[in-house]
Length: 469
Image 1 (cartoon, rainbow, N blue to C red):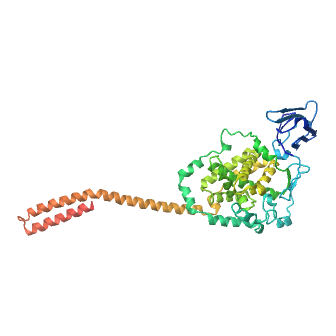
Image 2 (cartoon, rainbow, N blue to C red; image 1 turned 60 degrees about the horizontal axis):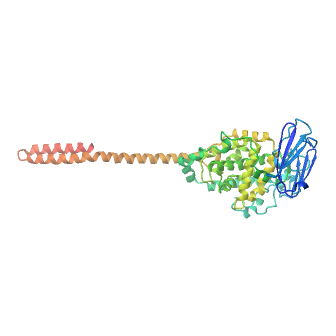
Image 3 (tube, helix red, strand yellow; image 1 turned 135 degrees about the vertical axis):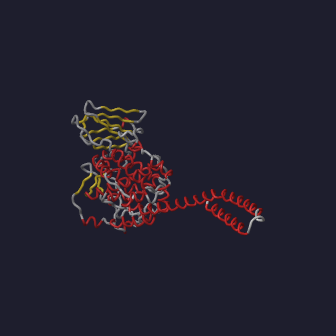
């Protein structure tokens, strides 16, 4: 059976449900309402929803079918008039449980309630058992054996099964230090014309005419409806780590949008993958500044444009993106999901390990959590000295070299100018010296030996004066 696309909306007293089922037999369609449960069956479609509140089927209920669009439209009364149903646009969260196996053994199917359970208990034995794990919330340990070696073009860490989580960031930093190119960094620092267009970009979500009241497109709904509705059992530490992973994934997304001027291209999936330490190195973070530093470092080591001011711009783009809210963040991750699926280098594995679960998890989060995360990131300033790449020392050395080169050029120019100004004077002095010599020769017959000595002395003093000038 196929899950059809659907859309829900509401007013004060009613809930409106649209089901897109173009290849159906209307005469064989069945609808059932039971409190918060809605069931639609019309071969080959099957849809079962659990709503945030209860609805009733009565004489005021309505139903229609539009042949041109293939849409069923239903209207039902709310059991409690005036009640507001939360998250009617969170497609996956509305789907009733389905028995779909998943690679994450600790992500259980939703049974009785929506949302994310946060446990206060931090189990040391559990952490010891999972110290070699990876994937969303570090829940995978054996399902993808040798995943790093299988996809070397995607993962820098080849054997996550043999590298403890606590050591991965240290290995990542060593690798980044090795790959950092001071020549590339300095070239981008002084090539202002090259970076200027990217620094001036206004990302689509920062544009003055951007509509924050956005809806999911049909294509986005088609992706969300195919995801299993899971209930997540996370500790407070695990939830923090999940949000930190979201930060570095979205940082890569923002970098891509700015450097492609809002037009993602075939390299975008590589950029997002490479700039995210979560996706490329299976890293885990417990601190917001720590993850931002990692993002800055990777943005200065791997992509084409490596500029600290550009990193700061992307930082601000990320704050603005999170401020828009949960729904837009999900739309951005759907875009990432699509890029990875279409990529020719098998980046679909990143969807299996991370992105699919993020799409499900985020739909269950509270809107306030995105505001809090945005404020937290906004209040953090990353300095060059924080990155451990000796950028300030590198720039200072470059400025000294630049100053020395400027002084050398100025000195060479001064010598050339001085030489050019001396030439006419030298020629004039030569002519005058020749005339004086002739005059001196004509007067030699009538002069005494002492007068000749005096004339020779005067000529020598003139030549000397002309050379100094």
